[in-house]
Length: 305
Image (cartoon, rainbow, N blue to C red):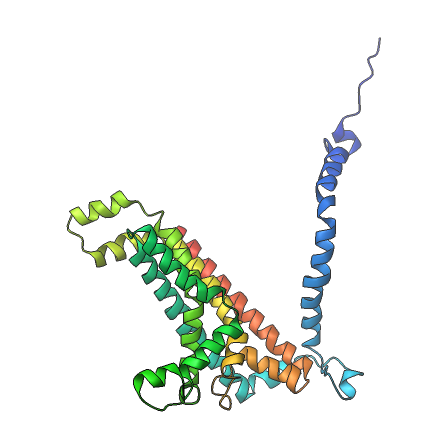
């Protein structure tokens, strides 16, 4: 008597649970379908279109707005030979290093350290004041700093002098304004990281004779190094794309003295209507941001090794 057996999956070529497994995967992905379509339309689509536009001579007016053509790397050749772009890139570098890497990062860490061991009321007041500047719209923050730094503003009144700070030191003005507005993020990141530092370890180091500086350098900072790298990456990317605060405070002026790359990109694309050239600048900024991210992520991996 012969017993009938089901054909082996190896014989039929069908992987075990193949069709049913695929159906389960499809059922799980089906609810995500609308979200994926929206992401493709409103995120990936515009990005890919901007990348394509960067290689054309597209403009908002003139014949190129109707008959745009592919120009290859012409926009990028022009870009890296443009002294105004080089100037804007150097100003962006100064702005990012001064206001994010040094300013926000250092000040946020200092505030977080000073709040350790303080009472709830003290922490609540300090957090409220610092976070209030962070949640403030950029245009309002710019108006506050304009009132503070203007010739008849608060700073000159207190110092008893007449000085137009926004014209004589525009980069210093926008760097200070961005530090004042963005420090809260770093403070919150470091406050959360410091709360995870074992108190008994710090106390043991103090008993062994380690001073505050040695405890900070050899215990606290090594234990929160991942938070430091993550914070640096996030505030660097945010500051790299900063536009509204600088535009409202100085407009990139006087002349091009505070015209960072986002402002230069805006000027080329929407004031001179050269969309292709402006998109090339945006693409370069995207690549620079990606490089910064890779560097920070690489440093985090090195620290973990």
